[in-house]
Length: 157
Image (tube, rainbow, N blue to C red; front, side, top):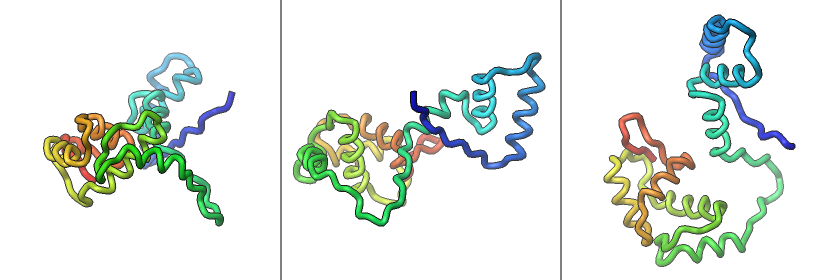
């Protein structure tokens, strides 16, 4: 079985060490493998290792740099293009890879450098599609990290 590589980064190694020390001191016995993974995840602000892994899987890994021109899948582009009508997203693609490409097309039409309230971003997204589910699109844009939801609920592009 192949392993999924999950990147791990701590903003401050000293805080990481202090958090791990405190968690280890609270244990009576030596923690097992899964407990250690959970401790590492909590030390960098996640609830547990599952949350850390889920976040890592949502962000696609960067493609290796290559001097060659990237391969362009013209059939995929044509499939996604058929989802658009008159510059608006007419239907949500069935394939996940096509959904990601459609989101990029939608994202490119959002005003840059602005912070929106939830109602305001919903109105902007509603003007960019025809199938009536702006909540789905807003949620997918946030999950894909194309837009950022702040702690006060506003959305930033």
